[in-house]
Image (cartoon, rainbow, N blue to C red; front, side):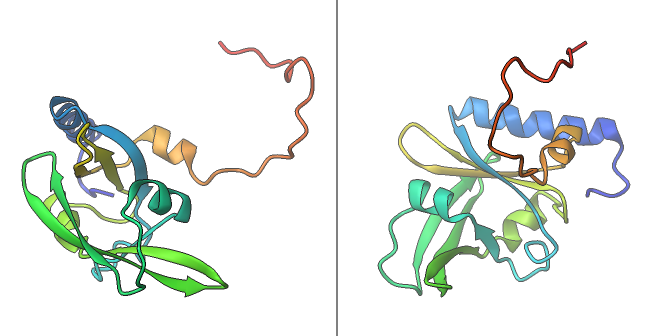
Length: 156
């Protein structure tokens, strides 16, 4: 991700994105670490079903609809939001993201940021992966039975 960029350059890129979101009063609702297929140049990005159905317009037709977004630098994009049926379930895609990826110099492992302004406008940005992204992903499936009293480990 952002090969050849120093940690400091990456941190300042992250800060710039966060500041841009703050200035727009935009609240982040989803961050997507780019997979190799997301970053392949096809410009297609898979959106998890739960996120798609909560934050994106409802789709009646699989061929989808245009979705407008603005990035944190004020540039506008029109993506195509569509789905296909996979095992009786919908798999949601955002197409046309290549332009955003190029604008933010994104590659595999970098993070696409999806945010919403109070009026519902979609705000997008790209930022380098940070250490916490690496720690966050992938989620580890833990057994569902929590033990009483915690693990005995102390923070610090």
